[in-house]
Amino acid sequence: MQFLPNGETFLNDIFLVTLQISNFIEEHTTCKKMLISNLNLHGITFNNFMKSSKQEQCQSVAYKNAYIFFEKLRIYQGKEKSESRLNNESLLPHGFSLKKEKKSLASSTAATGEMC
Image: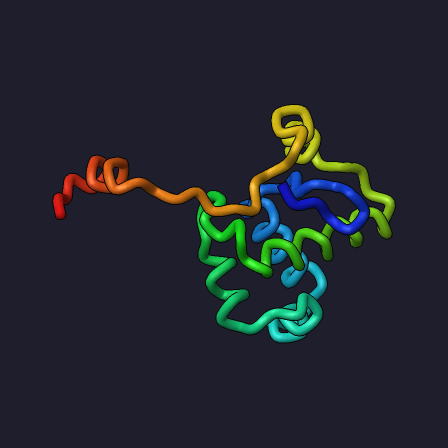
């Protein structure tokens, strides 16, 4: 488990982080290019992350940078943790994994019905 610089874990999932990004751009009329620059990302990395579902992009630098950005923003603005965040804290005391789970051949062929 990787921790944030101040010892916190990643307690918001990718869906919530991408939602925070979308809301931030909409609420602050921030151009996407400026936010990408502030998150220290490349456009392709950002776009791939925004298209992700579940935790498939958990190793992406976009997840780490955006999570840290929005956590610092929440603290700066004095906002309380969201209900989702509080729920994640109780269910996942060590936070979300930052390592992508490898699919086994057996599980991938069972899911798709394809054989080698």
